[in-house]
Image (cartoon, rainbow, N blue to C red; front, side, top):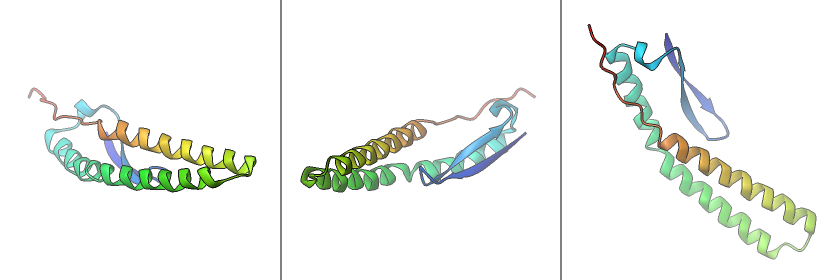
Length: 103
């Protein structure tokens, strides 16, 4: 049973990967993982703000763009950025808790 944090280049943060069951981990291991996750999780709102600024820049380009193909590319770029924001908020709401294990 182990937990690793893999860097996700799309989201630009490390995500926990649990091999096995969360409840199989001892309390000390769970606490260490939760501490690390809370640190990572705390960066998500700032990351979302960065992406929102990127969307605004792309949107401004789109409003001035006259070439249809380029407009489509910009729309796709905005959609991908919005998708990243959605995924980040899903991860932000992921808050595991300590499990009581009977001795």
